[in-house]
Amino acid sequence: MKKALFIGYVWPEPTTTAAGHRIQQLLQAFNDFGYHITFGSAAAKSEYSLDLEALDIDTVSIQLNHASFDDFVKRLKPDIVVFDRFMTEEQYGWRVAEHVPGALRVLNTEDLHSLRKTREECHKRNEAFTPKIWKEHQMTFREIISIYRSDVSLIISSYEMELLQNELDIPKSILIHLPFMLKKLSKEAIGEWPTFEERKDFVCVGNGKHTPNVDSIIVLKKTVWPLIRKALPDAKLYVHGAYLPQHVLEMNSPNTGFHVIGWIEKLESVLQNARVSLAPLQFGAGIKGKLISAMQNGTPSITTNVGAEGMHGDLPWNGAVCNDWAAFAKAAVEHHQDKENWNKAQANGIELIHTFYGKDVLKERLQKQLKLIQLHLETHRSNNFIGQLVKHQSLASSKYMAKWIEEKNKR
Image (cartoon, rainbow, N blue to C red):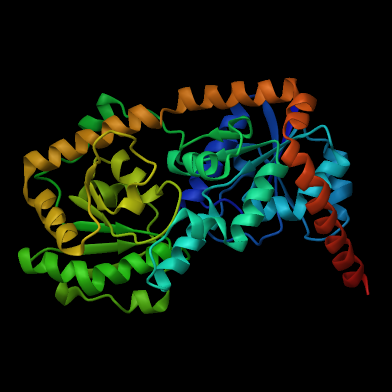
């Protein structure tokens, strides 16, 4: 039986993060491809961690900068290794290349972390983001080198695919555009959604460890929600998410309709009972899980250009996209009050899920591309000349730094 090794930056948490959903989808896909899967991570598990053993996935706790990983990977002899985020590839990529050179090395970027980081720093400086600033960021150098070192990288959004190819001329042969892989929404499931009349109020969803989410909650509290309440004095907003920091929890204000709830296990029921989802994101990257979840539950969403980026092609959005907060609040009120507008937005969301996120089509495309690369792995690697170049230089530095730390830890 073919073997796949996933090396996680953290243990998957599908109930708290979009990244956790993404990894869960990949694990399911590789299981369907016929791989026996082992998942390893140096991180500690949390109360939200997915029970991988229940999915017949072997788990192993691995160490950073330690020779025990070399012995482990040599014994396992995986056919394919998936690195969850570039930081993981930096730590373990050279060890995999050295001890199981025949294994296909796949980088799951989740989103471009360098893009998210650059945008956050631009926002803090009150400076407009440009690709030029991104290209000069230190994290971009690290992430792009990691992409070149890997045999192929999974890119989640169409915008990020365009950025990598148009701004940096990264060959398409080492990139696979792979959005979320989702089940089609059946007529039966759609028919069971609560109607416009059966829903009320607003919802905001976001993991508190993710800075763009915390920033968006602050924007809601200080700017957007007062405008909505002025138009709809009895409206309520429910803020949900794991790991919300104390200063966000203290924003709870039932008197003004601003309810900070925290984590909830059954997010679907929350989304299906809300009339509109709000996501005033000012920075970030990748595909936003909260916006996908809204579509999957028939809930229109109001967001920004950054929020909707790379998610809907040329098709209309599942609600409205606004960067001006007055316009944002106005669109939120309109979608909450106007049934025709609301129904149209919901239909747009269904079309987006079926057009861009169909599980079967995406899974088949992934399997075909991976098989093709595996079949011609030597040629694929030799064609990636820059990859060979950076591998020679950067792996050497990563390797000897890791070995130095390893020896230091023995003392």
